[in-house]
Length: 231
Ligand SMILES: NC(=O)c1ccc[n+]([C@@H]2O[C@H](COP(=O)([O-])OP(=O)(O)OC[C@H]3O[C@@H](n4cnc5c(N)ncnc54)[C@H](OP(=O)(O)O)[C@@H]3O)[C@@H](O)[C@H]2O)c1
View 1 (cartoon, helix red, strand yellow):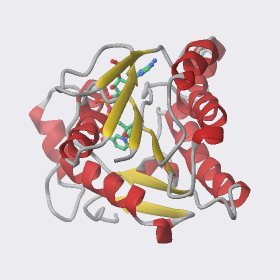
View 2 (cartoon, helix red, strand yellow):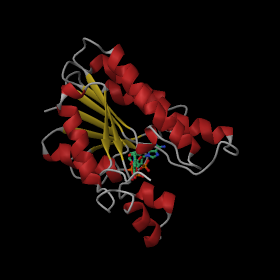
View 3 (cartoon, rainbow, N blue to C red):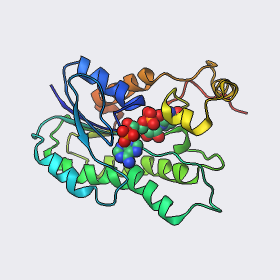
């Protein structure tokens, strides 16, 4: 049995991932602002957008036993704004949740992570390309790949592996909140994949679980997007 720590497992991809690990008999912790309603999950309420997340994170980590730990950096914020108009406080706050919080957790947990552990970063298709009006998200999702690659190099010889899983359009609250509930818009987004549909959270969850189990993926960027149609 491993210890699984997932940020943002109260819903969406994180919750689907937590469900798979619980089903497999692991000890699963969710860090988010609201609780996950899965049975047998350990909820830890922390606002990862807060510049003061370090203290509650270290309190939580104190109670975690050393061993095989899989740390999944999944929580993120997606907002609409451009390079022309993003408020600096809003930019800082997105950097806090999308980039700083993963590092707060890395630093606190690494001393307890033994060989066979992993750190999985959740990127996005927007980790390697940009679209207009999602400035802070594009910037921070590009950073996820940099963090994963630097983690891979810094942990050489530790037996801990790392991977960045980059989902495409997945049927979650984050996507619906960003594009709205219009079925027409959702259909058009779905039409951008070679399968003509949105990805289900379970499909990304399965990819994340696979990444934790396979050290050969150390340093890899895994594109999990159903094949995007190139225009
Ligand atoms: N859905 C997509 O199309 C898509 C595509 C590419 C990449 N991704 C990536 O996949 C990951 C999961 O996305 P999702 O679509 O599953 O999103 P989601 O359904 O909106 O879930 C986001 C999770 O992050 C948590 N979270 C948000 N702000 C937080 C904060 N300040 N402190 C602590 N937790 C916070 C939320 O919990 P609380 O609200 O309870 O705090 C929730 O559990 C993200 O990294 C996202 O960038 C998603």
